[in-house]
Structure formats: structure tokens, C-alpha cells
Amino acid sequence: MHSSLTFTLSLILSVHVYGVAGAAWGYNYKNGPQTWTGACQTGLRQTPIDIRTMDTDYSLMDRVNFIGYDQLNEVTAVNNGHTVSAAGFTEWKNKPYISGGALEGKYYLQQFHLHWGQKDHVGSEHKIGGLSYPAELHLVHLKEGLTLAEALTRGDGLAVVGVFLNIGESGEPLAALTKNLEELTYSGNMTQIDKFRPRSVLPTVTDAFYRYEGSLTTPGCNEAVQWILLAEPISVTRDQMEQLRKIRNTEGEEHEFNFRPTFPLNGRRVRFRPAQYDRLRFCSSSYFPSLFITVFSIILSKILN
Ligand SMILES: [Zn+2]
Image 1 (cartoon, helix red, strand yellow):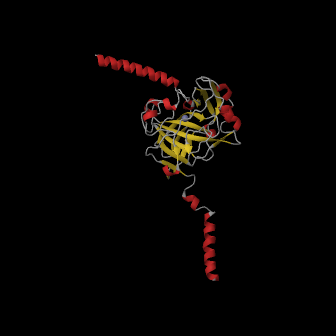
Image 2: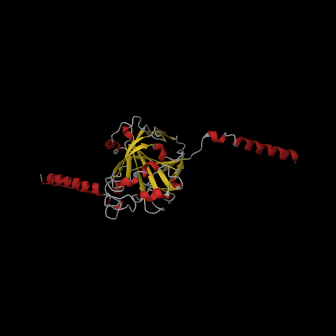
Image 3: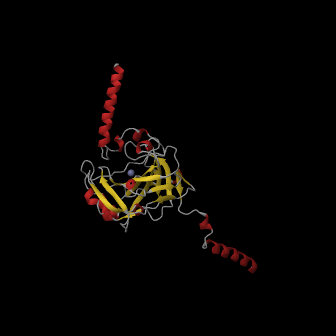
């Protein structure tokens, strides 16, 4: 009786504490990644990671197919206190989804959001050989036939496509979002984007990517994510980057950063698909003449000698 009462009380208490922690997590010294609980602390396939050459293998995976990403349609963007996020794709008549890329089946686009910092040398969640990009965009996809709750309990419930942002000339990729960004300054702000094309936040070349098994990068850090990190970044202008840095968190302050630090691989390997490895390249017209010239000049030199 006594122990069951204690159990019930501790359950209520833990639910309560979890509820409070769930609402209050963030990225500062009081509520940041070091304070997140559960799998965030104990997990062994956590995200993000630093992708180093020694942990990476070439892999002949098929390309990722981005289906329905060329449509122009309506999404709702929101400042949720942790990031700016855009959703509504599941309401579209032709729901955008991905397949291929060594994924099993289809994964439907749910939302995308961003991670950044106040300085150019930090911002992305993933690192490549120890280096960060100024920001990283995540397109979150749910496996066909699963609810989000079900997906979170499976190792392959979600597929997230990560896209690095590089400060450059073109502001095209984020234009639709940054046009409305001032309306999203404070936590809880929401705005409609009438014409959004998912393809716009993808790089021109999506053939080269890193692939590994990881987790959500926010509480509860569920180890349910098949990660696809595109090697080619997209461009964001300095002005757009500065706009992003003005977004406020739950406490009403600009995010010093909203990325999670990297985690050890714990035996995981990263697969890398280069952009060009197919047979066509080796049979291309530029390859054969040079081969012919080489063989011809060897024969010619033999004759002349
Ligand atoms: Zn993310």
C-alpha cells in the first residue's frame, strides 16, 4: 500500500517535472542541452555528429527522390520559442515526400525549421571535419503509415534531410521565409506564407549526401531518425542571416545559438554518396578521346623509336 502510494506520487511528480521541463527547455545555461533529460543524456545514437573522414565510407546508395517538391502552395510559419518552423505540407493535395537514399518506403514532409548562432563560425548542428556552417535547415519527414507517436518509438520512424546554409550572394533559397520573418520575431508569432516551393530550400545538386542513424536534436532526443545530410549547401545573404539572428526565444531574448553540440558516434559509421560515381561518367565522350590519344601516342612513340 505504502510503496504503491509512493509509486503513484513519484509518477505524478515525474510527470509534473517532465511537463515543466518539457515547456522550459532551451539553449541557455539554465535550460540548455546539458540539462535535457532522458535519451538526451543516455542515448548512444544521438544527433548531431561531427562527420570525420575516418568515420565515413563511400556507399553506392541510390539518389534521394524529392517528390512533389516543385509545387507552390501554402504553409504556416511559426516562432515556437526554439526556432522558426514552417508546416502545412500534409494538407496539400499532393503531399511532398522523399524516397530512395537507402530509405525503406516513403517519408512525408511534415515541417522544416532552422538552427543558427550569432557568429558566422557557429550555427549548424552537424559539423564536417570539425567545421560548422553559420546555419542548418532540417526538413522533417514521417514514415508512411505511422503516427508521430509511433514513429518516435522506431529507429526508422523519421527521415530528416539536413541542408547547410552558407553566406553568399543569392538570397533565393530562404526568400519566401525571410519576407515574413519580421512577423515572427517573438515566441508564439505565426504567419502565413501563400506561395512556398519546398524545392527552393534544396541545393541544385542533391546527389551527394551523408547518411547515418541518429536522433532528434531537441527533447526527448528520440533515436528514431534516418539522417540524410546534403553535402552541397544553400546560399543565404548576410542580411537574411542578420534577420534570422533577431528571432527571439521563449525568454524574449535573441538566441545566442539554437544548435545542440555534437555527440560521439559510439561505433556508428557514416555512409557518403558522392555526386558522380556512375558508369556514364567513365564512358563519357571526354574520357574516350583522351584514352585514345594516350594509346595512339604510345604506339606512335614506339614506331618513331
Ligand atoms: Zn532541427
